[in-house]
Length: 275
Image 1 (cartoon, rainbow, N blue to C red):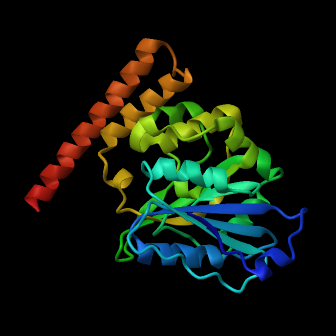
Image 2: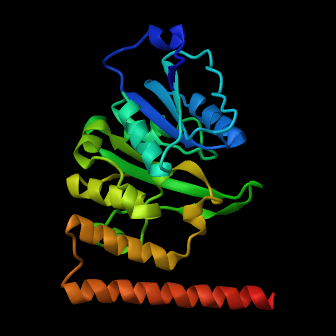
Image 3: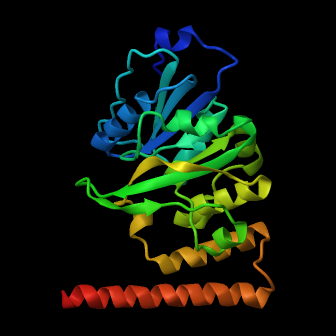
């Protein structure tokens, strides 16, 4: 059931000259994480309209966070069974009315209250642009586990899987989304990277040299062995008709990267066993 809980304050000063940002949060049985994410979205400051869309997968006892008393802010939610995270994200795209769409999953947060405003300063035409910034990685105890992201963007390097894009630090103009179409549910956990590879063939990304999100590392994608990622990226290249050099070189590069990842994984296991 889709519910609109926009306040009169949120609707009152709408200005067609302001950029409208839609933040899509997908969630399932994660009430605490959803509250953290909602508070982070509510706290964003700047001269823009903000729409928060919560797409819940039919959680037990789902409860949407209350709407804050804040101008130029609306919140809507949809709670129903889905086919996984990318099906939920596709629903979010269809719900979004913003010039710019940002996916901030449940339990992830913006790094600070000016992340959106900082991003918009780097854009000249938000509906026609997409891009990404940097992410900080944290575990549930709040312990820092490093940073994620790269600059400058290089399509060949990205498509090989050497430099992934942190999805929760990425943003997409509505015109780019219209050209890219839906996330491919058949591509598995790597569908976000396939989607951004497709966006990169439409227009190069804008790289924002700032930390934009704090990412919860307990998700399935983070815990997945790196060797699977290289196979996913090879499948994504093939789906889009991209190739890094001659066909034999493309396949050899993936095989080498996969082999290195396997060796690193084995070495890491041995070190942990000795400890």
